[in-house]
Image (cartoon, rainbow, N blue to C red):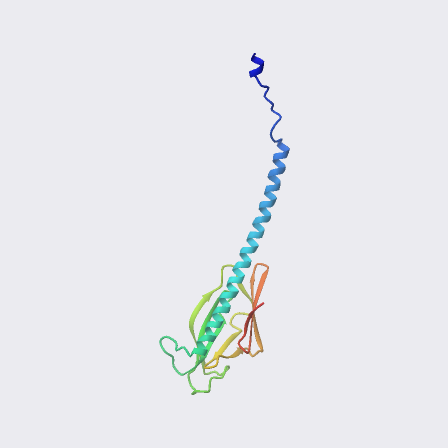
Length: 182
């Protein structure tokens, strides 16, 4: 009668050490690949976000010129328009520019009487930098009242190249005022 109630315990069921090690190796490889993809997606997202924000700020400067916005605190001289420039590889700004000596109609880019005054300053997302042009070298001017576009130095378009690690995004602005993502 004892034989009916006693079962033989079988220790052969379960995983072997080799099967367990192979499973852990496969899971580790999948985790490393997933983390790399996630990091790449995060970099790309920061880059796209920065590209969109810079494009929006350029359009804001353009709109200030179209609307003839008067800077807070006033200004001296003739208000010529608004502009956009990078100060360094991570900071950019909107400025207004005036001709402090000559009268209306004298707002020629390149005149020594043109004065730029900071209005708003912004920063790129962490790890995103301006790759080209060299900050401070390129400026976009939007003249009042039609937001006529002038580049300094003179060019038919301006390409802003952003970099985050190995990924790059570009913004192109032409003399017609069209701003596109590349």
